[in-house]
Image 1 (tube, rainbow, N blue to C red):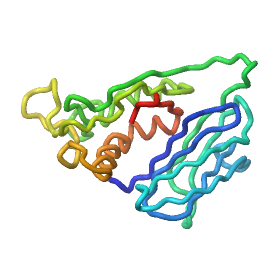
Image 2 (image 1 turned 45 degrees about the vertical axis):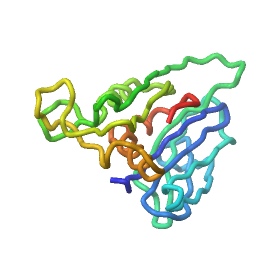
Image 3 (image 1 turned 120 degrees about the vertical axis):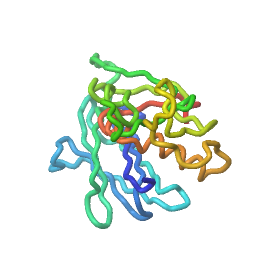
Length: 212
């Protein structure tokens, strides 16, 4: 639904990252960033405010962390800690050599291809590529372009499968964007997928400037 909590990290530097969220209700929230999954050693607590006009989205920049260090992050609201959490690794210092595992990708959900249903007997669901990407445990996903298509509907019938199938989750709305609300609806169809969300929580993303 449009009320799912979404998290992402990106623009990684040796001292931090940009953290992003979408939540269910407008209000004040804080990111908690820690070196351990139990959050006993919190290193930063940037605060953000979400509004209905802003699509219930916000981002914060953290720039006081250690280089080449794995961090966990989560979100706290007025009622406590929200259920999802993520991870990212800060970059090494410029003079420090370190291994880096990159993933590259582009063109998500074009030509009528949509998220696959989990109840139709297939061994894959959602956006299947992100399950593979999560398993790679990469440091960074570089999105090269066209990560959202809004030029046609996505129906229940999956291309390249027997005619009349109902393998896909249809995209709400007409499939064409005419205003901000249309864009946010289509965007959430793409990014609200559970496979994509899990990938975002484990791998930071870098989008090229023209990418939506």
